[in-house]
Amino acid sequence: MASSSLTAQVSCGTQPSAPSFSGLRRTCPMLDAAVSFSHQSFCNRVNSSIRLVSSSHRSPRGVVAMAGSGKFFVGGNWKCNGTKDSIAKLVSDLNSASLEADVDVVVSPPFVYIDQVNSSLSDRIEISGQNSWVGKGGAFTGEISVEQLKDIGCKWVILGHSERRHVIGEQDEFIGKKAAYALSEGLGVIACIGEKLEEREAGKTFDVCFDQLKAFADAVPSWDKVVVAYEPVWAIGTGKVASPQQAQEVHVAVRDWLKKNVSEEVASKTRIIYGGSVNGGNCAELAKEEDIDGFLVGGASLKGPEFATIVNSVTSKKVAA
Image (tube, rainbow, N blue to C red; front, side, top):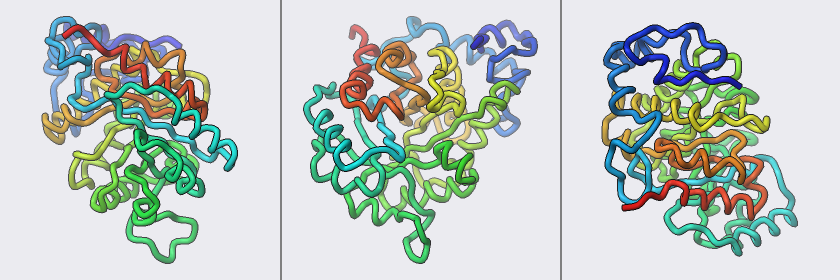
């Protein structure tokens, strides 16, 4: 799957040719009308500050090569998988795993097994819901309220996952409202964004991701407990994975959007994690990218030892002080 470098597309102020599969934009003069910055200023930022190729020109931030200031974050989304027995085995594997200390680790079991996991999983790992209702619970058949998630021990909830967007049909504005309510009630939110294959091939990756980000930004009261998960839909469960460079390009653009549209502080503090066929074999190379602050893991999170390998890929980011 070919990917042209964003740096190459915009360097020297030249217009890129139509990409074969860059997935960013067919033309780069402006990332988005809403972002309101010129082609030349964007070129200057790419060439001088957003570190697509190397971070060697900037001082390391502490002991980990990360653009954001937050701790590395790895979430495991178990989706609609598992039985009581298989989940007991998975929890046992996780409890016995040796995990790097400087990583926030969260798992998201199916709702019906959250209590089982909460009562048996090490306190080292926090628990997330996979979805929550847009407001207080009540006569909403099949839904799960934020209050119920909190009552059963959850600290986080995943919102905006592509399977909720494209299978269930949830819209950006509705997802933003769900995030706002969850945050107002004290849950952390793993806010998912990402483009479909046809959107990437049409050069609309930034448009889609920025629209989804804007829906969160328009609604949430604070970004203090928000983790942004970039998950290209074409890479989720397909075995295809964005190259480290493809992922880094989008993560850089997302952080820049936050800086321009929310605040520089939020852009620095907000962790931007990658999801999409992450596994024990590709996590280390992905983790080396400066703007990849962790992972949201699907299938590989159902295998305790492999999930531990992904958590421990934080060591790939560590640099000499």
